[in-house]
Image (cartoon, rainbow, N blue to C red):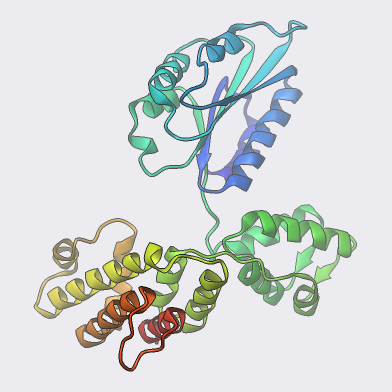
Length: 336
């Protein structure tokens, strides 16, 4: 289930003995564990045990903790926090075994950091086959205004649509800071207040964080202003240019191949296969190819090659010596 469904689910359903929490958003993972912990207390759990596990951890402690009776003979909650999605040979065996072990009077909550390969692992499939799974995925830019509105409503506050947009723009990609801004607004304004655009402008600082995926989304969607803001953010954060430029170059190359295939009469699905495009990239590349012709895409790839040279200290005629200026030019060129 999604994190957003967890609270209503727990309000209607008794706590299952085995839970798995995973996802890309640490704040939501922490809050999911908080909700399960509170539900366990409601159902009589008086003891809590926290286990921090890694590949070199003593995995014999897991079944011991899940079978040992509470000191007072009451219910117990055990929280197993994995340091990584690769628990090692002993860890995978222990997690596979615990999935089929009867949990009498014990609620086990396993928290696992997200990794793209996690759902393919045999031990994860065995563990989740008998567990309730809470997926704590990132909140997208499109979902953020609604997320803020719901958070503020819990504090008996409302915000103007323009205020929600500013909140979202200033906190995108940084959900922990976003939650802190909601708390700050709750301290600043009495219950029942309607928070205005001016109030948010004055009280909320810009704490947005972006990565190359955000940059690609903005560039390929044709949002030049946001693209330039993300480039500035990446520069300020000290991102290494080679660590993300290859991704931009690769996606532009795929888009060029896709557009060329379309121009040659291929249908969309065939063109995507020819370009080596799959998954979430498909919609983004299709959208970009709809407004970027092969000539412009080829020019963008030439600029990528020049940026690579400049970032390595080489001089390129008619280009700035600062690679970040040329990256901003590339972002604006593709997005325009």
